Each structure stands twice: as C-alpha cells, then as structure tokens.
Image 1: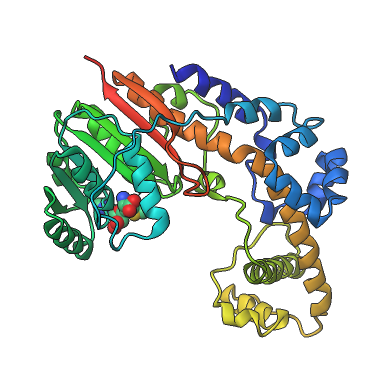
Image 2: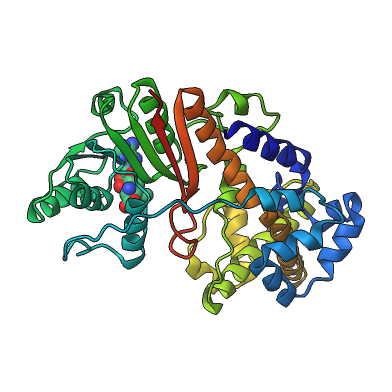
Amino acid sequence: MYIPLFQQLDSLLTATRDYWQFLPFATPPGQWQHSYPEMYQWLAQLKDDDLQLYRDDPEQLARALLPWIPEAKALLALSELKSLPQVSRPLPRGMDAGVPGRKWQQLEAFNGAMPALGLPWLEWCAGKGFLGRVLAASHFMPVTSLEWQAGLCEAGQAAAHKLKLPMTFVQGDAFSADSEQYIVPEQHAVALHACGDLHVSLLSRVARKKGQAVSVSPCCYHLIRGHAYEPMSAVARNSQLSLSKQDLKLPLQETVTAGNRVRNLRFLEVSYRLGFDSLQRNILGQDSYLPVPNVQKALLNEGFEAFCRWAAGQKQLPLPGNIDFAVWQNEGEQRYHWVERLELVQQVFRRPLELWLVYDRACFMEEAGYRVSVGTFCDKPITPRNILIHAERTP
Ligand SMILES: C[S@@+](CC[C@H](N)C(=O)[O-])C[C@H]1O[C@@H](n2cnc3c(N)ncnc32)[C@H](O)[C@@H]1O
C-alpha cells in the first residue's frame, strides 16, 4: 500500500534534488545566479516580510515556485497525511504529575491513537516511562520499559510504584544483542521519539522476531551510526537518492516563529560565520566552505573582528595585518539574507523528505508481512514530529 506512495515521492524528490540537496551556508549567490537566473531574481527581490508570509503559507510558497519547480504542487499534495482516529481514554488523576505540559498532550494523543490489542507493552527508549505510565493506566496490561540511563530508570520505577502501575524498567542499550530478549512475539512495542537508529533498531528487531504489533513516532532522522542513510526497505534501496546526515537534518528544520532575541542572536552568529567564510576564501584563494566549531555565545558580543580572530585560531589560519573587517562583516550579512532565501526553497521539500523516510520504514514493515498505517497522532504545534507508524502482523 505504501510502495506506490514511496515511489511517487521518490521520483519527485530525485528530479528536484538540486533544489534541496545542498548546504545553503556553503552556496554563494553567484552559483544560483548562474544556474537559475530567473529564480535567483525572484528570491533576491523578496522582502523579509515576504519570507515570513511564504514560511507561514506552504501552499502559496509552492504556487510561487511553480515556474521553476513544477513538482512543488504534487509534493505538497503528497505531504498531506490523514490524522489517525482517536479514542478518548480518560486517565486517573495525578498521572500527569511531573510531566511537562506539551509532553502530556503528546502522550494522551499517542495513547488515543493506539488500538487496544490486549497485549503486554514494550516501551523502547522510555526515558522516565511517561508513555508506559499512560499505557499501563489505560489498558491494564503490563509494561516493560527499556532505557539506557540508570537515573531515568530509577525515577520511572519509583513513579510507577507510587502510582501502583504494572511497569518494569530494564536498564539496557537498545542496540545491544542483550536487549533483544525483551522483544517477544506476543507484545505491542512502542517508541515515542526514539531518535534515528533507535527506532529503526526496534522496527527491524520486531520484524525479525515476528512481534505482533509495533507503533513508533520517529524523530532525529540524522542520529544514525553510519556515515550515510541506509534504507530499510527493498524499494528504497532501489532509489537513486543517497542521503547524507546533513540531508537527514532537513525535515527537522522547522520554521518556528522565534522571538526577537533568538532571531537577533541567530543573525549575529550566522552572519559572522558567513563573513569569516568569505574572508578565508579570499585569504586562501579557494572556493570552498570552511566549517568552524561551535562558539561560546558570549564571544559574539565582542564583535565581528574578535570572532574572526577566534575562528582563524581554531583553523590555524594566519590573518594578514590589513584586513578591513567591516567589508567582510557586510559580506556576511548579505550572505545571511541569501541563506534565508535558499532555506525558503528547501522548505518545500522538508515534509516530503520526512515522508520519504517514514514510508521507507512503512514499506519495510509491509515487506516483512505487516499491515501498516501511517498518519498524524497530534497537531504540529503539540510536536512537529507528529507522525505515527503503526504495524500489525497479518495472520
Ligand atoms: C528523546 S528521548 C525520548 C524519551 C521518551 N520516549 C519520551 O518520549 O519522553 C530518547 C531516550 O532514549 C534514551 N536512549 C538513548 N540511547 C539509548 C540506547 N542506546 N538504548 C536505550 N535507550 C537510549 C535516552 O536516554 C532518552 O531517554
């Protein structure tokens, strides 16, 4: 069922990869001016207010880009996901003690989207077991919660004890062979926001051990152990796309409406980095991006010159004595505006790329003999990682 959807997305994303598979930071305006002159003109004339307007309205953005990216319309249509049916499951009072507000809304929604299969639960990468608590309290079935951090296991076990819930925490590494013993056929395994390879490891082990059901809400696709993405399904292994860790970060770059302080800080840091990049290209006479490590935010208050001296020290780059720092700072600010415009183009591809990754997982489970459904379990303001993959083994 998901293979045709995957294939449609795959061919659209492959055809358009020049518009999303690149690093905006490392792409100076001249490159686009040369390759896509008309689109460059359109992007360059956008005011900051226009940017915000398009960020808030994906349909209008897709329409505006149609002259150059005709695939944008189909990609937008394919990004629509149905919301999964919700069952209201009232919980005893006090269950939300110590759970941050948004997290609680996620848990209720995740629980509401779970079919009641009457199976014991396995909670993978449980943290303090917030989800396990909710499942134990509303389904009256035992929960095994696997978590790496001993402190979280202790806190979770103590809370479960206090609430008289049938939960057992096991401290263990989800990747180890030892953890495999907790995955059994008669079980419903769940993972809420287990990063990258952690939820991938759950899906592949459930399939191998013929677990009855598994539900995961994926996040942090870039947190993988290899250098590049390894597709799970046969259909994705046939794709021409090959995704780097950088590409895998794209679905996570949500356009949050940050406050002024955060926006100003980002402007300062990114424009300083880009100004330094232009300066190093000039000094070294080379045309490639030079990444600089993380910086202590306090250094940004000391100004652009101080930043350049620090960055040059980090990269062991001797700075000549006659640098006009104001020129390079201005260059960095111009490039910052350009990066924002390139990120706007990439925005069209964020959700489609996320769905490509999600459907890879869904197709893998289908190939392993499971009936799969993919949908959203809550609205985006509650969490932007709101996709749920549910798979049940067919008899
Ligand atoms: C993003 S948190 C999600 C926690 C919980 N599922 C929730 O939604 O509140 C990811 C959890 O995975 C745990 N974790 C990370 N690596 C792990 C590993 N190798 N084995 C088991 N747990 C791991 C972390 O300690 C953390 O508690």
